[in-house]
Image 1 (cartoon, rainbow, N blue to C red):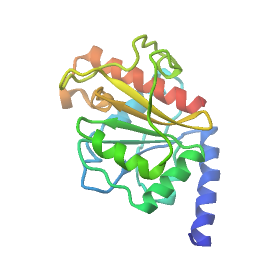
Image 2: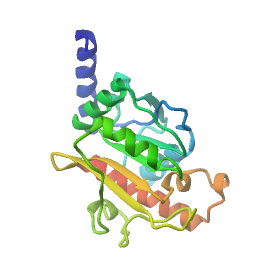
Image 3: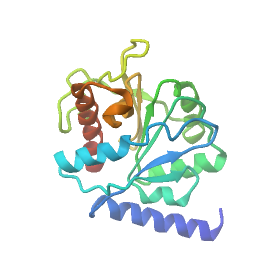
Length: 219
């Protein structure tokens, strides 16, 4: 790694830590390689941000950014989001950058939009070969940080009817990555006309999303 790139990453880490505690944190969609539809839910994060700013006293910038996995700009965001239905590929540079981002205080939420699971779990092994995804129990704090979900992760879209699961990855006892599976939270965050979800289903998805944001910003 060049000295110039190391200096840029150091500056980005400093900025990341600064944004945790100051006005208008920014969130970003992650644009990954491999041909999968990283752009699948374009209205999801804007709607979640609006809900959080109105209901849980966050001050998140309403303009959502897009960042590539290997970009030093990744370090500018305290929370980044990956979604899609298909293939994901991380290069060595992607894996190294994402690892450094996560162990430096960043957080990654991966929402399987039905079909991503076998691809993303394989690529995560490039990022952390010695770490495993661990299912979070229903009593984990993330399910109750604002709104109570006594049964854990809610089911938003049925698909094949399997139970929703949330898996975490930890570094030094801090949750650095959340993988939501068989839930489709991001679909529930989208504009109402996209999936025609009932309002109570959308509210459930947004409240769970708010729990995730609140938990991440406080840990």
